[in-house]
Length: 635
Image 1 (cartoon, rainbow, N blue to C red):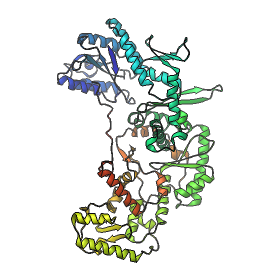
Image 2: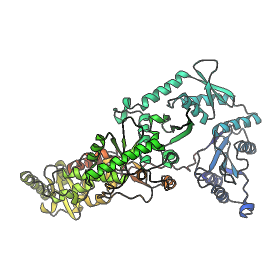
Image 3: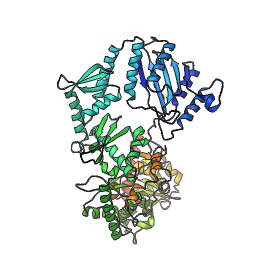
Image 4: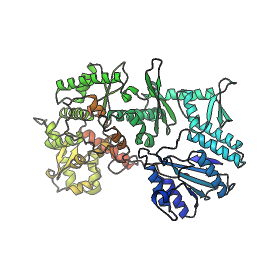
């Protein structure tokens, strides 16, 4: 007989799962116990599954701070070895040993698989608001099943050896820095791993006091070596992305996420409980506080990456000083923000990101950028990151784009409007005092070529001819333009032929709708990135507009970064919001001007990839199916 504890859930999805099975004749409810329906809510008669569900929620709501309230386990025997009555007796023993004997619980019997089994559904919240401990839950579950097997005279020694062999093979696929990490991996599976007292270089694996396998130190050292090489920036930093090991890629993802959270002022405890980090990405942070010989407290922490099968050492991931904000770090941060205020005051409201980074570099700080207006500074010899407020970063970002576009040759008002849309700036901010003269001889030749094509060709022939010339369609309001890589923009109405917008959209050409782009720029950001990066957006967060220059003169105190203590609890809950938005391109990209020709070339490349099946539809958004916490697929 074996038991399996299913994943924790925010709701009691196990009841709905078993209700549907019961209605289909594939399950039977054997017992509902400790539901004080009459005493507590005055309900008499035969309750329905919905009533049991409401009652479990009623009890669990006494602890609204507990996200994962459901306890759901399955006990299964070999084939038809035990009847439903015997499985019910086993379930009662199991429930009592797991600490749920006084909790309201339901037991359902299933026989629609090769093995008879029962489902147990209960709540972790007690009537008095305390919680049933889930510490060492899987180890206690294994011990309970072994006791049940003894009472039912079921031999499991052979099964234990076979199961342990599989679990050893699975555990040695993990990568970690310390021997103790492997001890923790086995502890989660219900085993105890310890060094042999008689044989050097050997570890003994046991379950409930019974030896079930051995592991050599060489096997453990191989996992540690793979970890060391996998996280190394020196080894992997210069490799192409497709050649980098999964450990390194996941570490980089974790670093970026922790940077985003720190830039929004989330505390270390908040970050540990964020839904996105734990459930969506599979990173679990564990920490303990220890005291040194002088009595000073230090935080020791690690990150378990379940999808990546890696336990990361904290020093390989992120500077803890940034997250816990010690007194020493706070003083250094205050100094940094004072320098930021001074630099911005001297440079003025037109300061761009490049100039700002140069000034901070001269003061000894290295500036780093990320997605979503995230920017922070580091200093040689110091641990931690000093984050800039997002609106300040947005202002520097915007000013840099204005500087970049203003340095381009702009030949016409229409070209200025296109460049403004592509680079997300106001036309008034980049319109030159004097337009750059055009090469009239080249424009004359191109104009004659385009006019000839419009008068003599139509349909697929016209599409093919224009595509051969490298022409793209540009829409601005009710005006229609052709963009030629040699001659620039041409108003189609002046080329003759009575060509319409509808006819242009029917051509197999790239179409740039400037007005639509201004309205839905986040989708074009997805195109530029060639992938969609999403993260939860706290409700009420202000969207940056194209002309936003806020923050260049504001006071950059630590409170601006941390957001203050009053909103921390709310912000942590905001990260459980299901709404997402597309992340902005990395600010490294704003240092490179985006020309009209370059942007249209990118459009053509991405369009070809999408036609070949290499990209997603729907305006460049490629969304992964979100796996619900409440999915039940245990059978």
